[in-house]
Every structure is written in C-alpha cells, then in structure tokens.
Image 1 (cartoon, helix red, strand yellow):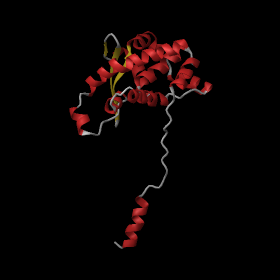
Image 2 (cartoon, one colour):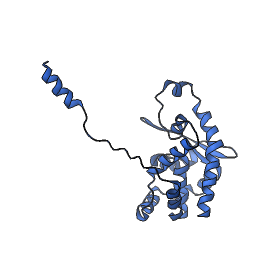
Image 3 (tube, rainbow, N blue to C red):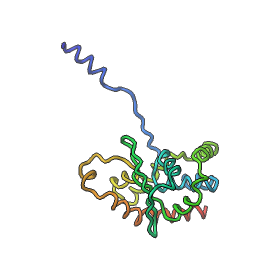
Image 4 (cartoon, one colour):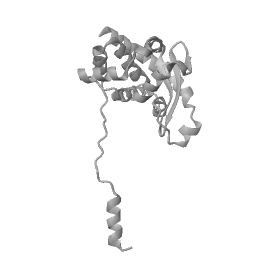
Length: 194
C-alpha cells in the first residue's frame, strides 16, 4: 500500500469523539436530603441501593427472586447470594446491614422501582445511579481496598492476582462487617435525626 493510503486508513480508525464521564458523586448531605424527602417505603428502597452498591437491574432481580435466594446472616449483616451474571457485569452478593435486611424481608413485595424513580424525578432528588458512586466512595474513604469495593459492586477484576489469588469474598465479609456496617448505622441515625 502507498504511504498516503496507510495514513488515510489510520485516520479512519482513530476515534475523535469526546467521552465525558459522569464524575458527580453526591455528598452525604445531599443523600440525607434525598432520603428525608422520600416516602417511607421508597426510603427503605433507596437505602438498599445506597448500602449495597448494586445496579437497578440487580435490585430488581433481588426483589423478584427474594424467596428463592440463599441468605446468610450474622449479628451485623446479611449476605444474599445473587450470582447474577451478565457479560462483564456481575453481581455475586448483596450485602446489607441486618436491620435493613429484616425490613426488606418484611416489605419486599411492596417495593417498586417505578414508584421510587417517579418520586425522585418529581421531587428532583439524587438519582438512583449515583447510589453506586456514593457507596464506592464510602468504601475508599473507609480504607477498603478498591479491589474489594469492585467486588461489592460486581466489577470483573482484570489483574491475575485479584482474580486468582485474592480471597475477595472473605475480605468483603470482613470489611462489610468491620467498617461499612458501623458507618451505615451512624448514617441511619443521621437520617432519623434529620
């Protein structure tokens, strides 16, 4: 091929479009304000997103399969086995503080993604998609390794060490019980005091 042809083909291969990632992460104050303005059932639903780091579709899966999913509890948290795998987006477990799980077990039939979404839109509150960002940020602020935070949120690991040698489930159990539950209990008290 001629040099001019090669240069022309290279120019066609280079993507020149802009990619503007959404880097917004809500503050604790904004999240508390959103929770305060939600109705009681929707507040519980929103807290599930906040305290688990799950995607909308994964919480929908959790609710529709709640009776059949395996659940492990201890005195601090519940770990619900999801094993919900979709291409490169996976969700292995849903971790929730024990009191939030108990409330969910009582009222999961009455929770509706549509109801929560429409109330958020109507009142111009923090969208559900930002719950994952808030959760991940809290993990990092609490000195939880990013590989474990990724595991909570179901991201695939691309490092050989993280994939084959790191006991991520044991570490996730440890960090959720030792760091996240205590933070979430304090945060829940802030919700009640608002």
